[in-house]
Image 1 (tube, rainbow, N blue to C red):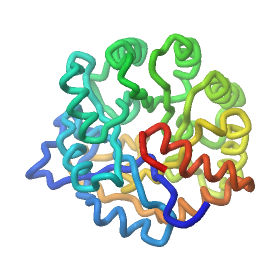
Image 2 (cartoon, rainbow, N blue to C red):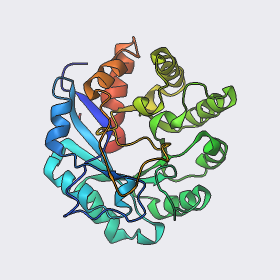
Image 3 (cartoon, rainbow, N blue to C red):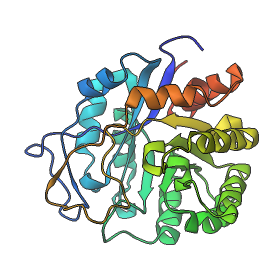
Length: 283
């Protein structure tokens, strides 16, 4: 893989609160994070394109996402959040034209008012049928069994967020459940390491990444999760007080992921070919 070919498949752009209204039910209040700051954070890496994911604190108002996609142009694609009743042909057409290629079901970052995954997944899959979009699910390992039972029925591709939120110390059954999902055809973002780490466990993530790749090397992608918003498990965060971003070293996270796979062909799939296909980027 040559320089400037990698695609970062999970970031957030955060606008000025005076312009982009924050969801009153949010779990935290983020600091602004611009496209310019993002490119600076990864300036010394091979990353040249990215995928902007709708964060929980904007709810289903995708205005900031669409504006960020317009700013980045051909260098970016998007993953939006919509309530099922918001999904209409015109809405999907407009979002598609803006660069959106998937919808996210976030079961972990939303404080209240979220539909159960069992209901949301079926409704969103039905609404997206024939669109070519995928469904990105952010959930805990407790949902693996349901997803495994449902995925063969889905019209849309299923994409798991952040290593499936499987952390070091997870029960063997949870690890096996994640691998069954991948074996059944699910995609996975090998992202969010800085959310999941307990420190000193770099080998655990490398080994899991390789175990996943052995099953589904054509369905793995990488994401930085920039700008590293507060941990989803931190219930002490004041939703109305400004939460500064964490700084795990974004470029370092990319370089660590580069070291996971010895096979250059697998690295090229991971960083370029797979995300280009999933997010409709030219190669």
